[in-house]
Picture (cartoon, rainbow, N blue to C red):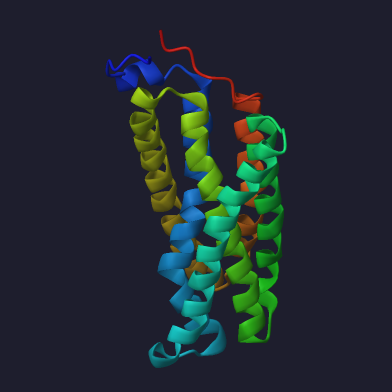
Length: 210
């Protein structure tokens, strides 16, 4: 039986596994917030989509995101059932998600709104699939009594990243008027995040808290 003693936050900070999870949230979560907060403005500015006509593209994007969320969990679980290690299954699923995000780089260049919506929908679906696996990393690497605290630290990292990206987005748009740099960042940051996770926790080995 596992110990039920609480794990202080300060006891989690020295572990590389904690920072692997925080890094995954810090880098990728802000991209989701970018879609939530800036997507309507992007569609309006680029394709002159008025508020009354935003419903259709946004509904498509978020329904596709729901599908991605389910598929991400299914993919890694399916690989584990086939005999893959947890480390290989999680990171392979995350790699596939990171690759699926890359086409969003071209969304800003599309002259057709629905092509851009397709790129963005694929990216948001891949993000949700990515997140399904990232959240599970906490329970892969930590005992149950520490999972909530680790996820909380990761959530804080994601929120700080969101603040920074929102500030950066505003500055980029004010200076250049172009979404290109943000979409390039959105299309590449997941692979960077996966590399950081792998460097900090090459085998997703459980953290030794005792």
